[in-house]
Image (cartoon, rainbow, N blue to C red; front, side, top):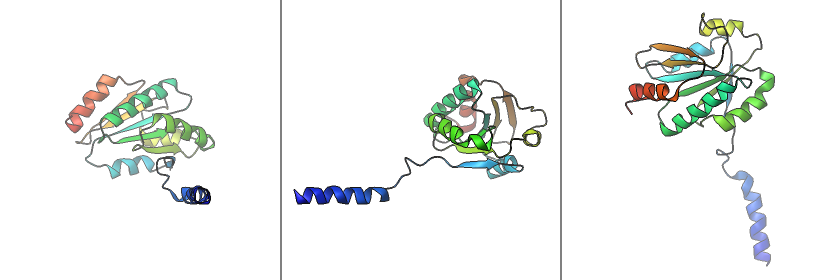
Length: 164
């Protein structure tokens, strides 16, 4: 009986040392001026998707669930998710990402509630409507779409870019 008690105590002592990668939250980077160019530069010549979303956007949640499904199906899909919410909403953003984001997606959060300069830097034609998604091809061609994506269109883009 003493051995069992000792074994249980040992397990509880060692448990905090166990890896927590499966429990760890995704890192959410602060999206500031220059972040958009940083994301693009890091992926030069590679296909990827940047999706801008918000907690208050119902279509955004549907789209993120679809993108999560596609990212899980196509492991090479490079996905960047940028929340346009405020830094004060970081906990809620993290909760939404835990539910809707694939683990391998890079995640960002607008670091300032004054968003006009960020919108302008990203795309001078974008006025903040959501969801807003940018598809970057291997040839550095960019396609911007405002509004909810159609899964078949995204799957076709993935097939063209990754050869699935």
